[in-house]
Image 1 (cartoon, helix red, strand yellow):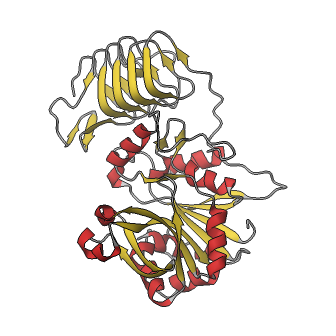
Image 2 (image 1 turned 30 degrees about the horizontal axis):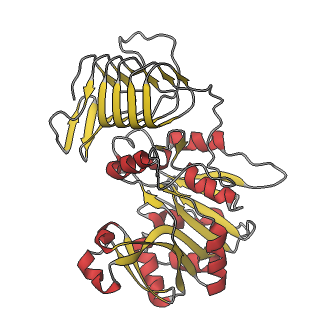
Length: 403
């Protein structure tokens, strides 16, 4: 299948719903599950499915994403394969940035047209799931489809957040982009939802994008193909989660810490890959941990941590009480500091329902608990979204601060 299929992974736009995690990084570069980045999910699924001709289309805040891909994904020169970046660029022929998912692919068709492939797999870079794309490909060939999209059954009450697929015998007859629940009541209480995973015949994709003004797959390309083309759905029954908002990102990561977690990063024969960092084992001294995922290279010197995720190189000092929190870790170690607040979480801190982004410095005795119970707020060294306190990347929180 590898020589027939070319894969395009969409690097996403501004990612404003994930602010402040996307203030310094592209959405697919946001950390997930402690030791990975979101882009590692579709890339790993591709590699495990035998797909090794991959392009990642990037535009916004892409420096860290580009660096992560360059450092992480190298294939044997004799076996073939690549993960290459297609970065947005202005030129005499192209005078605008990407205006949507379909427009992003359209602007890169010139880089693809001389390559040898029969089908194009298009993926999003901000979902958590495990899928063998060979099964999608088999369905695509069986139906002789112009395009096949993966669909997940969800409650109709959630329809306003997704594209809804209306199908007869798996052939898509209508496509509704983020409809109100009452508008698709006739489809039942559980309806097929577009997962943002598309497999196109080469000629069908080029025909859909060239000489048209379609900007987005969900809003324009797929509805048009449902009316005039052979568009089929591929039902997907396993775990899938969109982590495009602070609330969904927080809940999905936190769910990984449960004993009955709906999704596990470890499955024999289907690993998720990332950059090899060669970090030491985590150094855990006195303390109590319950339902906690701890990544490599951490130093935990005491206190209590419960129902939380602790990312790479995290430092948690004595006497802390941390619950239902994502500590995303650090990008580096330091020998000493000259700014008064050392890297990591200081002694005696109390933290509840928070996201501590990378390289944050939290002084001794801080209380990060959303003391006023607000849903949304912004401060000099924090942001609150959906009632979750987010300490931004590299922020400094002075000792004794209460948020």
